[in-house]
Structures are given as C-alpha cells and as structure tokens.
Image 1 (tube, rainbow, N blue to C red):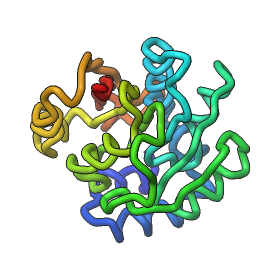
Image 2: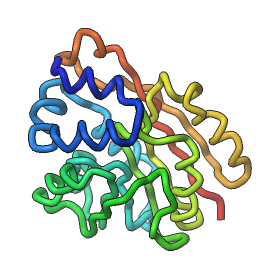
Image 3: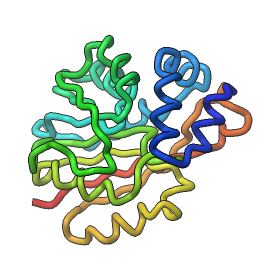
Amino acid sequence: MSKKLKDAYTLSSKEDTINLYKYWSKNYDKDFAVRNNYKSPQKVVKYFLKYSKQNDTPVLDVGAGTGLIAVYLKKKISIPIHAIDISKEMLDQSRQKKCYEKIIIADLNKKLNVGNCTYGAIVSSGTFTHGHLEANVLKELLRVVKPNGLFVISIHQSFFIKGGFKNQLESFGSMINNLKIHKVYIYGKIGSKIFNKDKVLITTFRKNC
C-alpha cells in the first residue's frame, strides 16, 4: 500500500485534499487504481447502466479526478459526460483521456456556477469519503439535476451515518424517490491488506418531478 493511500484516509480539510491530489495526480491511476485494484468506479458504472434511461443526460461526474468513471462508462455507451472537481491537476489528467465534453474546476462545498435542472444524472466514486465533501453537498447537486434525474454515488460505509449522509437523504423526503443502497467492496483481491475489506454504499435514487 502506498503512503499516499494512507494519507487519503487521514484527510481532514479542503487544503489537505487539494495538496494530496496535486502531487498524486500524475501517478494516481497507476499508484492507486491499478495497484489497489480499485473497483468502485466500475461498480458505479454498473449501477448507472442498470438504472439509467435514455434521457438521463448529460451526466455530471462529481469529484471526477482522473476520469476513471468516464473511461469505463464510455466503453459501454456513447453519452455526454461533464467532469467537476476541485483539483486542476487531477482534471488535467482526465482531459488527456478525452472522455469529457466539459471540465469544471470548482469547490463542491460551495454553490456551483451551474443552472438549475442542467443535468440528467449524477455519478460519483471516491468523493463522499475521508475529508472530501460534506453531506449537505447533496442539496446543491439535487438543484442542478433535472426532474426525474438519476443519482448513482458511492458513499464510504464508515461515513454514511457519521458524515450525515443517511440523515441528509432522509431529509429530502418526497424530493427523491426509489432510493436503493448497494454495499460493495472498494478494492479487489490484490488491494491493501489493511483496507481491502473497506466498503462503499452505492446509493441510487431519482429526483422527483
């Protein structure tokens, strides 16, 4: 397991997050995704394909990083995907893969410069976890999604309750529907011996009309 993976599990501030991913960006895919058999992006894509409809476009990849979700999704279907992340350096890596029609650098903990009801779907992997985004970000994401838009987001199991995500989802009440939660392993068999039992909750739901 790399030192940076250990660092990722101890993030506690926006500044820590920006600095870690700035220096990790060029080697992230090899040092993290490949080395640890990182499965979460593929599983987000799996559930997006399971629940998505033809009009769930464009897709906003939240915390897109180097574009792992987009790479897997583009292999399956041709669909417009936009990326949003706070790390310019990570997005620079994603740009080279040419999977996104638009790339947005933004702090997701703040109000986004995105119009109401812009996106047909939200996907996210590895973002709702240690030291990254607060649960109330979901309110802003709900704003930018079209009526009946689809959410497929991974939330680290240890933060689902502690981080307020369970309460936030419950507070939406009739604003969302068809909430489903799928518990999956983050890493494959060659992952870290320390973290290879870690799980995320792939959380899917739709915004009500």
